[in-house]
Length: 321
Image 1 (cartoon, rainbow, N blue to C red):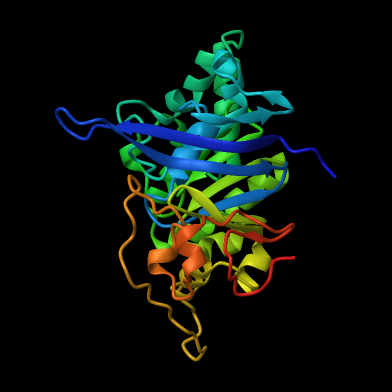
Image 2: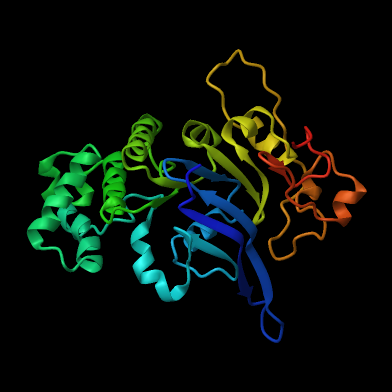
């Protein structure tokens, strides 16, 4: 089997949050103990509600923030802050808002050439321009777009430009943080198809951050479901969507719209409030909202257990194997 491009082991990120004057600060565990491996030509999707730690995980993978605990490796080598400058060329990110991530005062050609100016000073102006024009064509845009400004493009075209910029340094890992959630439904499929095509051509490893399970089902190979900073289920896309083990995953899937109006579907409505990330319960974090909760769930936190398909639940829908 192909070796992973990147691995994460027991990855954590904590923040100290002020409680006010004369009060001790509290610790917010945005990410707690997440593990995964990214492989060339494969997509790992991370899903969950807002605030579950998806974007924090993306910032650690892209070396924007340093993990509080745990470790990352890239091509088998530890990712440490001293090496971030050289390693960032191999890990790039595409943000959710394509307009906000592009400088409105710069032409598209300048935006695309900027990563090369910073990271590859040995390249000549002619070489940078040639690569930028080549990348523009690779994402489906025309040569005349090179000298235009971001406001002259549609949302889908701007996201294609953002993807092109991320690919300028020939990365091995591409982090996609909600890459189509800001686009019209009619445009989402074309951008997703572009990402799939680019992955096949360039053998990129994708970390796909999303809350939209219908999109995840289209692009993912493996899925991690997160809840309050922790992975509660992990497995292949087909296994997670066909037989979800964790009640939270089952609830998320029940809320996913279906195109067939005749299809029968059980909608699971969660009761109770989402616990504060500053005061996560001692037992299972999902216990206050779970319809299968028992005393054991409130007293002890379940670990992620199982081999190919795992879940952090004492009473799963189906027993992990």
